[in-house]
Image (cartoon, rainbow, N blue to C red):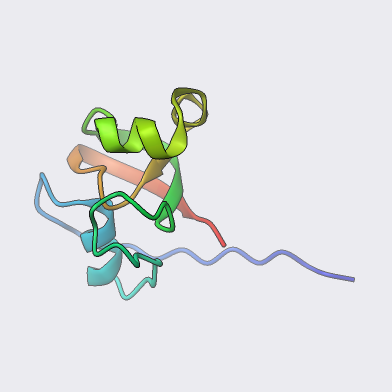
Amino acid sequence: MAVKVKFQSETEVKEGKSLLKAAKDASIKLKDSCDGKGKCGKCKVKVISGNLTEPTDREIKELGAETIKEGFRLACQADVVDGEVIVEVLK
């Protein structure tokens, strides 16, 4: 039987840093084959809570408005605004 295990890691970043860069600072590996340009969709994460910049046109094109409304973002396109941000890293 498979058991789901969730790991958490925390790091502090300057306001305006992307989630992708924050993940790298925390040694969390996110796929990003397009070098952070928002074209591959591999760095998709689920935002549980926190303040981020508005979705970019690239994100809307790649993920779709409905998926973004469900809390999914591209880590390379979403920048931290302030406060605490909690993000789930997807497979």
